[in-house]
Length: 206
Image 1 (cartoon, rainbow, N blue to C red):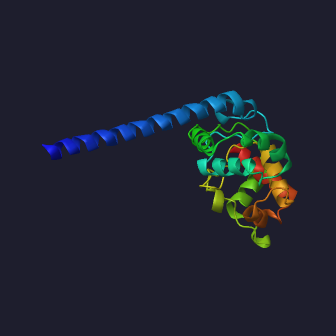
Image 2 (image 1 turned 120 degrees about the vertical axis):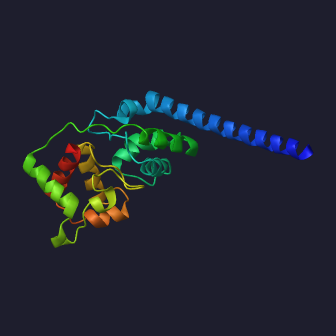
Image 3 (image 1 turned 60 degrees about the vertical axis):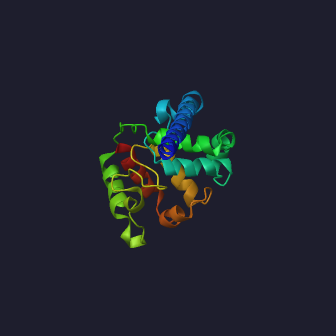
């Protein structure tokens, strides 16, 4: 009887711990959704679907990338001009728990549907650069890190459907070392602005 009582007590305590953990997770999810709706949506749109080319879409972005970038804003290691202007102050108020919850929230939202179709010739050129790189300059294809459909992989962000002006600005600040991103800088340092423009138009059209 004593053994059976012990097993029942152990099972009850494990269930309570699980339920408590679930409650904490649910609380974090609700808090993240509330923050996204009341704060982040002012720039990034409802559920992370930005309508302004200045601010990126977050819906469907990889959680690992969002978490990494929010932490970089918070510790001010991402120091490009827009980061300083918009995100340093915002991220400084976020706990690590909230950062993780926001990353999970946005990663779980359906990605914004592509709605823009650029010049067909430029889009086709951008597609070639994305899928094949620029072998003559030893520039690897973007798809090797960002996925065949630019869907993103772990810390490499989703690019499909992202605003072309935002992407172009980020490519330029990385190329000019205004934003620290050693891997990306090495990849794009020899891309011309025309090649960048074609790639971002292709990505926006996806």
